[in-house]
Amino acid sequence: MCNRKDINVLVVPYEGLDDFMRGTSLAPSKILWALESIEEFSIYQNSVMPKINVIDGIYPTHTWLEPSEAMERIFSKLGETVRNLEKPFVALGGDHAITYPIVKFVGHFYDDLKVIHFDAHLDRRGSYKGNRFSHASVMARVSELLGDSNVVTFGYRSRSEDEPEVGYPFSIFDGLKRYLDELPSDAPIYLTVDLDVLDPSEFPSVSNPEPGGVSFKELLESLKLLRGRNLVAADIVEYNPLVCNCLHSAVVAATILRELSIILVSHELD
Image 1: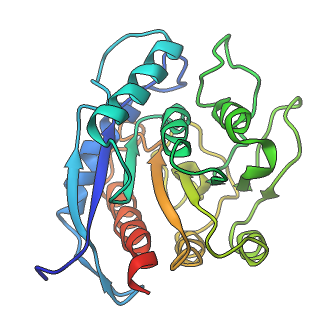
Image 2: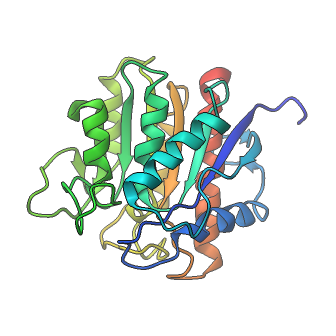
Image 3: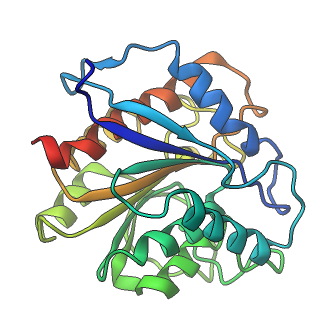
């Protein structure tokens, strides 16, 4: 047990002013609380969760900044607190906008970073309610950083009329397997998991639920496809405890964190 690998978990409770329902800033503390209630050992992967180092102060809760300024603050704080990528990390949001400054930071360490995006929505609006740094436009901004071909969405089942038809709608596993089969095994990958990719019947605690989502089982099996790949960092976003303050949502989110943490260190272990 004492020789376990360790992993950084970044607490990033940013919540945009244009969110439909408030509450995502409370998600990191709720997930970490629920993590105390589950086993460290994963029966799904026959592995023990790595040691968790919690890093907070990336973004203070209830700070009312313009979105562009908030993104710059998160980016700057990452440089001050993380500094390098010697340890893999998972960032806990907060709303999906946090992915942009985190990818911007991680991209400085890799020339050809790939972003895998699990979501019920494409998040490629040019802007939303006048905000270019919205949760609804975050993948448009990430694509501007890395190029459209390096950002791939899986599991979406909703888009606005002006968003492109890209990626793999409705399911994750089959499309991700095809994508990874064509990707060099050493390609650096960043994973962003918007929890509304799950069906609302299994995970109701999101601000913008969409029917017809994937099951927890499919999400888990899809995550396991990344085991042994060069997954360098990830985030889990859009859990909103105020929508449904139910224990099972917190435990699902915590279990995803456990499984993803194991997968992030698997590149060194497998």
